[in-house]
Image (spheres, helix red, strand yellow):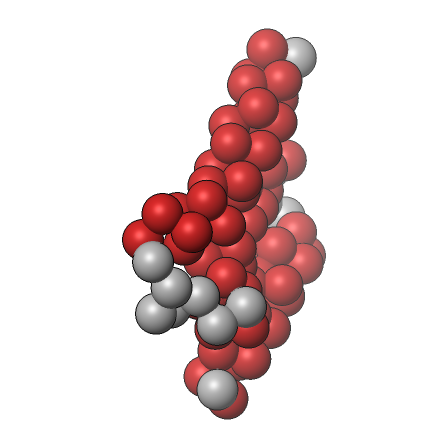
Length: 79
């Protein structure tokens, strides 16, 4: 469980550290989009304890993140 907490903390801190190094906003946006997917999978599997749930329920719980990221990334790419 500690490794999951550490992974989530790293996923939260990584964009801040990347911003402080001076990376561009475009890279940071895509970094955040990718980290959202990682964090969503970790949260669903470990904190919602759906690791052993039926595949359909697990998929339904994890599917929201890619859909939301795709919609936001689509708006980001257009603007």
